[in-house]
Length: 221
Length: 201
Image (cartoon, rainbow over all chains, first blue to last red; front, side, top):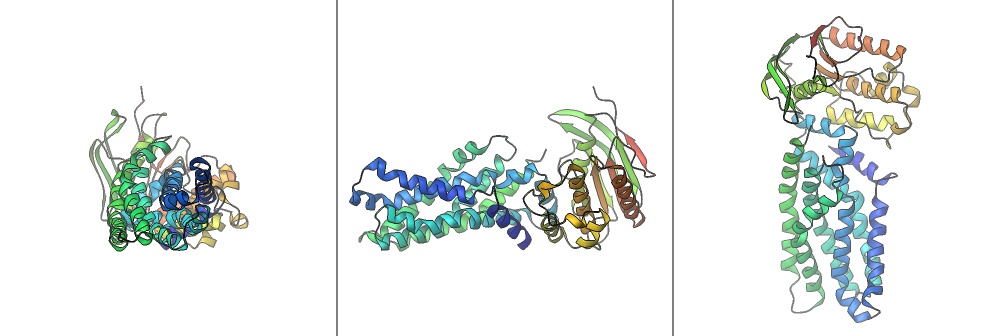
């Protein structure tokens, strides 16, 4: 299992892995927003956490459709499925999700404080948004794995994956953004939405891999 | 150990392509699956590997070695695709499969020697030629131990020398009590039973 993690990290970091594309996309979205809403610094600071979250969500979706498709294209997926006896397929999926998150989503989280400056956010707001993204984005990857597994045999499933999983990620977005606001606006609570966000991630860490494994098993042809 | 198929039928896209196939292969023997294009050779192999569900009948491995509980766990599947990552080096690819599938008797160095790829093990897999890629995939069979080998057109892209070498590797596997089921158009140089799938429409 460790070998699978290392292999997928390596694939993510080497040419064509898409890690850089995700960060650039994130950067582009955030850089475009001030042009759209105008140079009102107060307004930018207020919508900052929400924009960072939406940007990170879209950038995460970008590479998700390839999660299993590359393995299917070169025949590895067959062998991963046949390895079920030694390594439970759901566990294999979980490891692939973790590797994908580490290689393509964690860099987004790391880049978000810098992009927070673009949005004229307070240091506390930047810290809270980064923390909620660190806790919440794994849930997006794990939900995305289900969509990616369902669409794995479709030749152009990329957009379909986004359409399938975007509605499912809305709770993550809601609680992520409300926890970020909870840290800066006084009456709003921080801890409650933050804990729910953590619970969503843990919930999908169990449900996502099992659902994706079931979809993968029926996808072979 | 025996691989037994009884009354096996296979479907592709809802269309029955073969039915009522029976075969028995015991340890040390090979079965060649032959037939024209579209006769269902690859489908049969994928059914044995557990990647497709058969339309009817049963396939089982009788008295398997104790280390393997199910048919899929006892099987090496070499399909049309080589299951290697183009951006990783040959060495990295094989090391991954060795740790994922389990350590076999043959080390990676030995396996690469056996398929004559030792000198280019540091190259990314994507840079290799078709025949070299196939040999790398054959090396994957050697580095983890599985009694049953399912080979789908194993010699596609191999030159004469490599073919002969591969025949030697298969004979060694059979001599060690293994089973080979191969779908092929070409004689593999093995003394083997033949299962001829019917002419397709």
